[in-house]
Structures are given as structure tokens and as C-alpha cells.
Length: 216
Image (cartoon, rainbow, N blue to C red):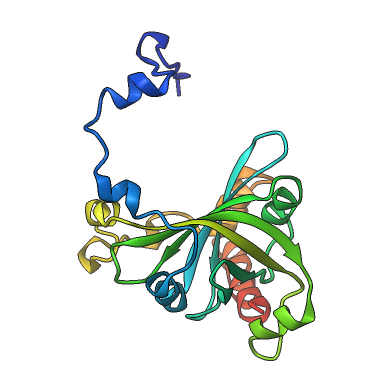
């Protein structure tokens, strides 16, 4: 593909110019932002089995990572504090390392079937306090560490993005089989995927077996 370059003539580089393109913010959009977890935020979090966490490294590189578990996996320690278990993964540890150098985090909580979402911002730390980790045990396995977030802002986000995307609409589900498997893609991007279909199937089956054995 030919490299794309942004035309500097159409680059918006200051907030005043940006805001001039849009209507003024609705008063409620400003007022809805809270500095603690009220009953509605706590209820939303307790129902959510999935969130995305955004972090940033010390040199400004951004990262976003999914976190998922049974409903209620994020523990509300008090009206200003959340704890998120860190389950087994690929051991890149991008999120955890970023937090150690830059504690500012952003969370997006999602509930299947809900078009609105909950956004939480705060400052995080990585902890291995047994009293916290034991709250997060699944199948008698506790996480090695947890992400504890001191909340600075909380607000509900409107449903437009989910309505536009038709995310929960069964008629808009796509067939995963139309793309190569995860293992196939990663091998294509690295050492090269085998051309033999049986060999590829064995690798795919091995990943599924690993999922079953290492979720917790």
C-alpha cells in the first residue's frame, strides 16, 4: 500500500479551532462527571464481566488492554477505590509495567446487551496484598497481582457508538472462519505459518487446549 500522509493544511492543532467545529457542550455532559463511585456506578461495575484499560508508558506510548472475568470480577474496595485481578496472559506485562512508570489509567466498563458504558479514570498501582488477591480467587486460584485504582473521575457514556456499530445485534455477527486463526495470523507475522492444513489444525487445537488449562 502507498504510504498515507496527512495534509498539514487540514490538521487541527489547537482546542479553540477544534471546538469551533462543534456545538457547545450540553450542561449535563459537564455535570455528570463525578469524583467517586455512586450507587449507579457501583451497580454497573458489579454487573460488568469486561473492561478495557488504557495506560501510557513513561515515554508516552499508549496501550489499551482487555480484561474479562465472571460478572463482578472487579472489586469495589470503597467509593474511591477499585481492584482488578491480573489473570494469566502472554506475560508481556505491558499494562503493569506502564502503571509503574505512569500511574494514570482509563477504564471502560462494558455489559453485554447494554449500549451505554461506564468510564472511570484514576491513578493505579500494582499490588500483591493477599487480602486483596484472595477476594479474586477463581477455581481456588488467586492472581499473582492486582491493579488497584484510586478513582478521580467517573461518568456514564452514551449509547451512540454501540448503536452505530450494532455490536449486540445477532444479525451483525461476523463469521470468525472468514479470517485465519489467531495462531495462523501470529505465525504469518513472525516465523511463518505452515502450509499444511493438518499441521495448522494441530497448532490451533493446542491453543484451545492451552486456553482451557490456563485461564486461571
